Image (tube, rainbow, N blue to C red; front, side):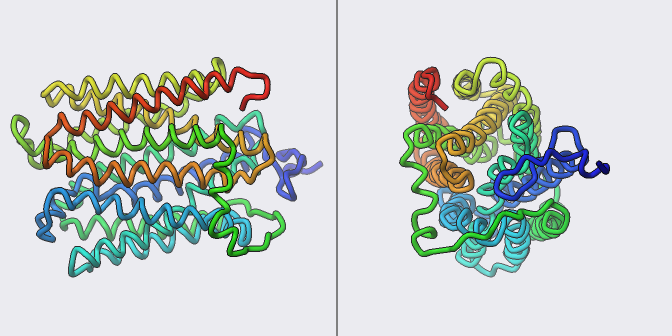
Length: 414
């Protein structure tokens, strides 16, 4: 048996060879998907620290700036409806690579936006394209990686998205200081295109037989996964966690610009808290392996509640600490939920790509609603109003965690 054959276990899912842990193929898959996640999430979240600059540049109100993020995540929901059926038809790898290329082109083009409306339109177009990679990546891993490496593979991919989220929040302000927000869009757009080409060219291909693409698939393929009650509850938990995360991060830029902080450009320093969360998927994977996914999810939700409390203290140090705890808890919980949804779909015989799309569809609904609501709440009621929204959302997530935890203890549980 030659070296390539030795590196692969020829157990098949469809016609895709499942790759063994610690092989060169396994490491290449994880590296490329992590890089794709990095580019994807940097392109989604880069406007967040630039909201005050966008308000000044386009002459729009503080409350309206939340649309820079919300319009992209709302458009991603449309993309998520079609991403899984398209990937079933065209293949996982072309769908993921092509989405990064298209999104990168539209992101770079937004640097030329003459008006706020044009900027939002290009953000929406990029959002539709950006939906494909996160919708398909976990399902792709489910198809090509052995069962005993699923938690590790999912955690590695989510770590890549975490680095992308950090890049999207840390790179914009120094780049904007050099060439305005326009330079930020060009650099991150080019990064997305470059990584998209590499993913398309080098990621091991999806050799599963192409499936037909029907109007019914496009309109309801992803939503059909929500008929499973466990998948539905997991999706709702993800949406509520995302609502808390995005809402607090959106509003914190304005809070740090206002008294008693008045940090101005120095507010960028608190975004150094974001990389603190990069190790979370690995740690939460270990908790899930020992105690179960339900326990790991409950730990994450509890830690997010702690973060909300820490953020109430009006000190730059506590804001930094609170954002670090928030990011760590959110990314860890998200890494568990994404794998859990796909694992549940696999266990009950549903499409893993469509279940992943359903999760992200509900997840980005939480982001879209909270992203806009948080900036309006800040404008009308300050940080206390934003905090109330976060507490209500995380309390609901905790209640759902307890519900799914009891369900998971049953013999037939996910």
